[in-house]
Image (tube, rainbow, N blue to C red; front, side, top):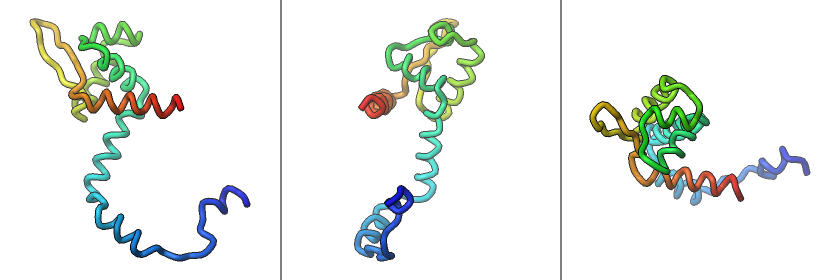
Length: 119
């Protein structure tokens, strides 16, 4: 048996009850699209690095750039995307803007991702 055969049923038989159960709870297409867009944000290693840094401490653009060894402009660009997806938030203190994760869910997602790849 080769790998292609493993991915196919030996004969066509739809398990109607199982299919119906899943279709009944399947999220709307728009929600699935939003979820796919959410996970696309995690597909960039610079954004992952920024999220990891912010999971450890609130930081300004200068500090993040120094840690990652990239320009403030590059950090700002990625932070803009992360803000649009509501993964990070910011607060102003005088002339400095500090960034942090929007909520604990983001840190959980990162931690679960690391658990998965380290298995």
